[in-house]
Image (cartoon, rainbow, N blue to C red; front, side):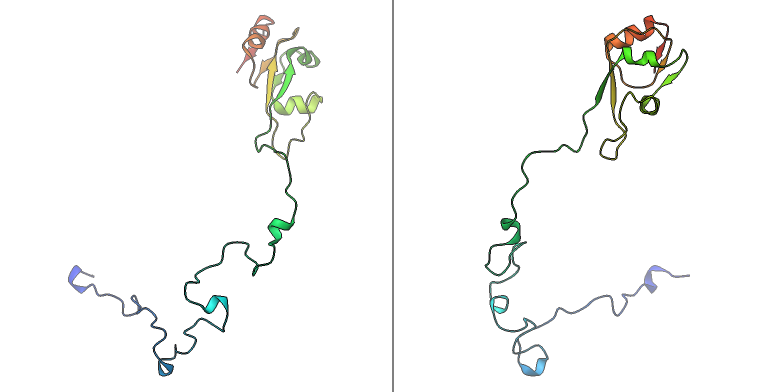
Length: 148
């Protein structure tokens, strides 16, 4: 079993820093790992800015900017409670059911659409499982349905 007094540093766990520019015999003389001549070989040069292309107009500035704004979060689709009369009594109303009946479109940037039910006239007893407004909730419960 290993004990604390037996612990030793692994011989290859530490490494000396590279010493450069100390003569030809060192193996890192002359160009001192800087490559050839030019801007990158000079002192003071560390790293070019992202997109720097040697002084010419960078591609990012040549390409026209796309104007406008497109939100990552899609707006919710508002559906009137009146449109739920297409379902029969006792049906469960969720996003998939609304898409299946053709009340809303499924295409929404690859994401499941968000729906909110707003006021209208309802004549069916339905179990609703999508967000609803306060007025819509009252109308659904008045018709004998439930909101979850």
